[in-house]
Each structure stands twice: as structure tokens, then as C-alpha cells.
Length: 591
Image 1 (cartoon, rainbow, N blue to C red):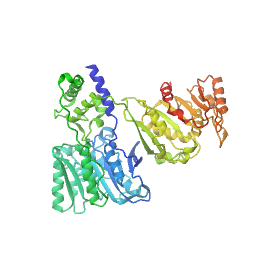
Image 2: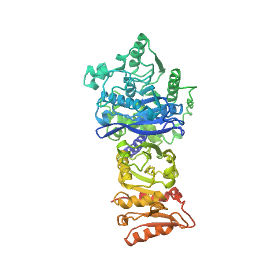
Image 3: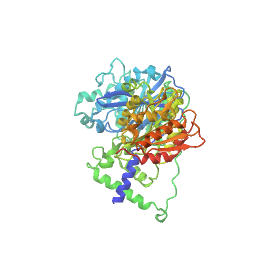
Image 4: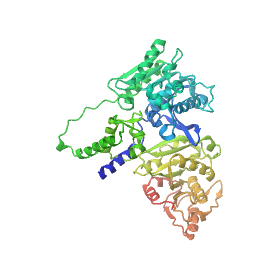
């Protein structure tokens, strides 16, 4: 039984990772803070079309994730957002506070949703969107938030500019909750009927309500909300399109082929309103025929599957306190509670038998390693306004497989002088990131962009932000860079001796053409593990510069390693392609 528990833990850790369902290399995406509540920064993830410009006036769509107002993550609608950005819209996925992480009730979720819609309309010039062509969308609890945007008089967050309307021009709602005015939903609001009405979209339908596409599975117990909405919309005479997936339950749109089928329906709905042109480009995957059933003797995985299935039954029996066949976030325990949002694939706030079966299947075939996922992230204004030598955006790569309970080590790459003339998007999937991705390394990777010389004080601000936002292990932060980035590595590390577990300057020499000799406080580096690389034919930062530093550090007792690359000039950044460097990094840690 102990062995089964260990394997179960392993698969739960895999499920902590968010799977990218679709990615179009031509689209661009960034994450921006739209609101801060206390110490919590709420972000909006923006997807832009390939030919997007800030001067555009494009239609926009914003997605809200599901999770019963209790859990969930913005990653839920990444497939849809990426697709619609490829079709020419600006698409967004918004984070908001939830009960499990922030202790809030559904009305606070609605407040955050209204705040982010106002943020989008306030920043139309920056986002290149038309404020009069905004579509609200979401699934389950997120569909409820999207629908609440049509309510003129609802709950409002302190400090919001109420002169900016939240009412969208259209709505695409995936199995949404559309009313809190019933006994079951009222309990989530402490039986506050006045508050319930303020966040009950069906009760606010009128002739000015925006057109909607509402999608349900025919076996979804929440379909009753759709039936009430469709009936009232027909009586009033407003458009409310109906999409029913035969035999499907709640959250069906998260899985192929229904994910693609519902997206095609949404595409056609938006095209009918003039927000998209042409036919849908997404393809529905063919459903493969089931292989012939094997005899027991031909199935070597039978024992593993039985163990997995038995573990799932044990989980359900132990945690399903009210015996309804499902596990809520309050009932979940241990690893399942920590990874609830990953296992709850349909985002309805409950883990049902099907989701446990999916977990068992993942347990059976858990062989895959982790992978790096890169994105461009915008620094908060309060940081970028101080760190003026840095681009306000940076590239961060995070692992899609995380070891639960452990913070991630971080590698920081500082680019050379040529990087100051490149755009931040050019640093996505560079050679360094590809090399780190060759093995199942646990590193996250940070690549900032400098407008000129690297300045330690500005880099400090960036690193402090990244450590906080990405759960970084402060004892395992590694720094490297080439050319100007190599010089920056020497300079930053020498002034911050207790920050880096190890550094690897490449063609740095501690000097640069603009400033000449850089006086480094080498005393601070004498106990830092250092592996420096230098071409003996380098005419930009000659080898003697690096040799001078190495000699001084060795006299101080430094464990520095020097690799001279014979016959090589300045362009030896390819050393970052050798995984030996990353193996060496992993052996180093601050005490």
C-alpha cells in the first residue's frame, strides 16, 4: 500500500502542471497586473494577434475560469484565447480571488471581474481594442462572472471608476450558473437575498441585454439555469442562442472533441455579430476507434491499473463525507487538496468519478518528464518605474511539472550588448532555454532585457519580484551571461555576495568598451562557486581581463574554475548549450 501511495503522489504532482492545449507561434501574450487587493496582485493574461498594433481597434474577448468560486486558474481557457487571437481578436484570461486561496464569497469574485472589464476599457489605447466590441465569456462559475457583466447595478469594488460600463456587447457562456436566487445558492452568500439578486443575471434580463450563446451538456444538472434564461430571453425578445451537447455532463467543453466543437460554435456566433470574418479554422479531432480488448494474460499493466483504481476508490470512500459520489474542495485532503484545481478538470469545484478515473489513468502512464513553458510578463508599474534600465517586460520559463512542497531553483541569463537592440519577444525559446529543457532539470529560467549596461540595483528589484511571484528557492539562484551579460554577471554578483549559489560569466572579463576597467569588489566573491569561460582569441574582452580576475580570486582562496577555449574568439555563448554547466549548477547551493 505504501508503494501505491508513493505512485499516487507522483501522478498528483504531474497534474499540478497546466497543460497547454493549443499554441500558435505567431500570437503574442503577456501578463499584466490589473488590480492589487492587499498584498495580492491580480493579473490579466493577454493574447494578441500576430499583426497587432496599439493603434488597432479590434474586438476583444475576456475569459473567466470556473471552479465553483472556490478554486480554478486562468489557464483553463488558454486554448480558446490563443485560437481567437489567431483569428484576429485580442483575447484575455483574468485571475480573480477565490474562496480556497483568499477566503472570499462569490460576490467578491464578481467585484474582481467587473474591475478587470473596466481595466480593459480604460486601457483600450494601450491594448488596441474597441471598447464597443467587448465579449465576456467563462465556464461554470466563470460563466456566472461573465454574465454578471451585463448587470448595470451590481456589486462594485472600492475604488472602481463606475463611469466605465461593464456591460459587454455579447456573451459566450459555458455551462454557467445564472442565478443565486434559490436555496442552494443562497447559502454561499449567508442567505443574503438582496446580495443574491445583485449577482443573478437572469433576474436582470431586459430588452437591452446583450446577445448570448449559452452552451450546456444535456446531462448537466445546471442546465436548469440555461432553461430559465432561454425562456425569459424568448419572452422579452432578445437573442440567446442554445447549444446542447447530447449525453454530456458539466465541463464537457474542456475535453476534445467538445472543446473544438464548442469553439467552432462560438466562432460562428461571433462572426454572425461581425466580430470575426471567414470560416472557423479549428478542426475537430477524429475520435479513434477502440483497440481490440486484450485478454488478461496479454495485459502487463493490469496490476498497476488495479492498484490505481483501488487507490481511487479508497480516496472517494475516505473523503466523500456526504456520500454524494463527489469530493468537494472542503472534503479533499492531503495531496488531493493541494492539487485540487489540477484534478478538477471541468472546473465545477467538485471532483467526480470521471475525474478520479482520469487520475487513475494518468497514474498508470506516468512516464512523461516535465517541460519548460515560456511567457512574456510585464513588471508592475511600481517596479518598472524604478528599474528604468530594464525593459518593463521580461521572459520567464516555468516548469509544467513541479515537485510539491519544494521551491524551484532559478537560472538568470543576462544577454550581451546585441540584446539591447532586440525586442523582448526575441528572447522566447532562445538556445539557453532549449538547452535547459534537454533534460528533466528543475530550473525556472529568467531572461530580462536591458536598455543599456546591466545595473545591479534595477536587477535586484526584478529578482525580488520574481522570487515572490514564482516561488523561487533563494538558496538555489544561479547567474550567467555572455559578453556584456558576462560583465554584468561579475558586477551584479560581486555586489550581492549572498544572493547567488553559483555564477558562470562567459566572455565577461569584468570590463566593457564603454566603461573600460570595472573595479569589482572581488572580496565578496571569494566564497561563491564560479565557473568562467573565455576564448583565448577574444579581441573584445581579451583573455587577460578574465585571467586577472581569476588570479586575484585564487589568491583569496576562491574555488573558481576557469575554462579557456582554445582558438575561440568572443562568440562562445554556445557554452550555454552544454548541459554540463547545468549539472554543475545543481550541485551548488547557499548554506
